[in-house]
Length: 516
Image 1 (cartoon, rainbow, N blue to C red):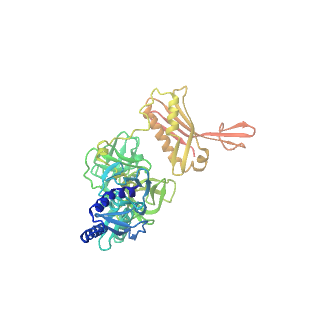
Image 2 (tube, rainbow, N blue to C red; image 1 turned 30 degrees about the vertical axis):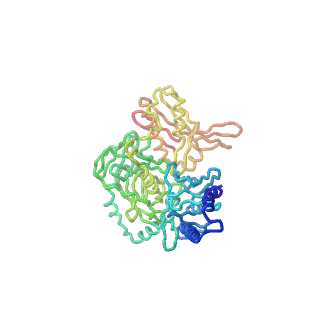
Image 3 (cartoon, rainbow, N blue to C red; image 1 turned 120 degrees about the vertical axis):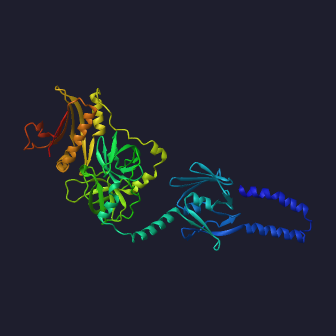
């Protein structure tokens, strides 16, 4: 169709030439003029080679330049730069996609659309001899590649974003070989003031100063908090106004202080110079002991649900969450998150700083201005709430506990008020988890029950609350060694074992007993 259009445009010129020229043939001067015109057309279109990431492309049709614009076959250039391309023949539309990028342009049209935004082209796409050509520079730069014209070789040299990043990484790796290592004391001297203790109305953790009024911590430190303060190593209290950005999956949050901090921020890199066996230093506030320092090794680097974790032998504990993990070069490589208790192996984990760097890159002026505490997953009060609503809340919010030994499930939640006016909350623990891991998880089960009790006390401040979590399992024999009433016959040589694992009681004071 395009070829017919070009021919129809040329026909009147040919007719005019025939009418004006002598019948026997062209005169000498006319022939010379025609020859010069043909040479001008030929010289304006020059073939060239296309090189992507150092390799010459094998093209389906020869690339060429016309009026200073280099044209390449559509499918060849998109494919070479790792993009998919679709050709809609009815409308003459080209649609290219790569990651989050979408590029749309139409044959003969001087504009294109990139991610919904219209941009002007130096030259439109064109169809020649059945091949669709696109302007090389526009396509390449739209896909974040760089373009250089090699005049001597008559070549377009394109470097993809991936190749450029890989070259930068290789250069960076060379630089790392010459980096000086720091002692634990040198790391502490440099960064101790940049690590703070965080106190919320629900929990205590740690944080790392990453900006004038920004602190990086774990999401679980700030989740469900309605107020918070940061305490510096020098004793200054800083009011927290809310959360600027967060990633619950990576367990990270960036929080904002009401006033700027006179503290040197820690630079967020990508932690790529972390390697198994490398030395590390952790700074945090385990059990509220502010800015405690521990050291160890990178025991492993693992991935779970798309999150990169650094396993370390540097000791951490409750309260270390949100603290800093530095490598021997003084780079912040992770945010300490969790660890296994009841083991001598020092199995502790930090979320890789690469996720924090990504989170920080998304911070905008709008997010800074609208910083606020996250909506609580719990209601502010349960006073007057029906027991059915309380049971629903228990099932949704307290159905399981992730321990260092695995997940403990709690089922059959019930809420009742007894004749003495107590609110009694009952559930059954997964019997297999309890048999295998109950003793190892006793402290975590205790803390979970205490936390549950205090959260319900905040929602029902005038109630006497009892939480009873029980073990129940049926057997094909009569188990021995249990207290009276803990084993009952079901008939048919079936027996049921049931006893309380956790008994937590709370009003003005707390009582708790955990059976292991």
